[in-house]
Length: 247
Ligand SMILES: [Zn+2]
Image (tube, rainbow, N blue to C red; front, side, top):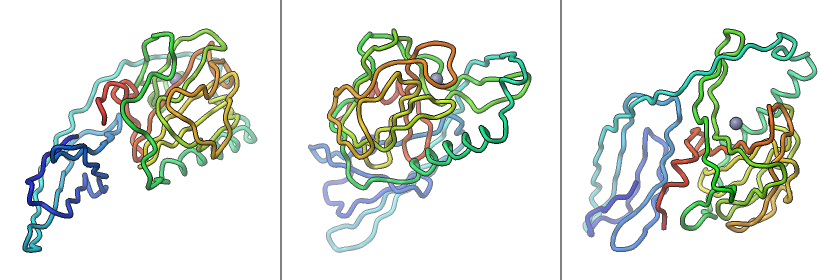
């Protein structure tokens, strides 16, 4: 969101449902904040802004923001039960891997590494598909598809959509070769099923840098890039991030 606070406002701060907003000045008196709304969010959020006038008096404004729920397609799958149920050892592994990702979403790097618009992670021009798809496997609802899938030939280049630090590069049961980039200020991008990743944890990567290659590792029906975006923990539509005009 972009705001233009009164010119006399000093020490401007904001929050959305008690989550602090990181406001960056973008010129001619305007400030911008990236706000992520989770794919399953609905209802009312409270935007709160406060600042001080030249006499040091506090001014507070609040606006309710209505989030309309978005409808997503439903996919029913029938699989042999042995493919759905995990043996205890694998179940432990999967929950540890999920735990490592969850811990990342909570860690907010205070520095903003990204600059300007985000690039598509694949160059082929393929469209991201299937964000939010509600999957029902053998009549059991599963968590919705939290990323978007790009069809691409195995070995196709995956590039960093913006500058970042590598937060995770490891092989996981479902995700296969998984890579997570930390762009700072709570923004992460996620890459699953890679043939290989070309970077390692803590590496700094530049916008457009080749970070991996499309593959079919982990649980997948074929080669594609699963691309996800987290912003302060919210699972957001990658297409929405790529559409933003950012300064
Ligand atoms: Zn996917």
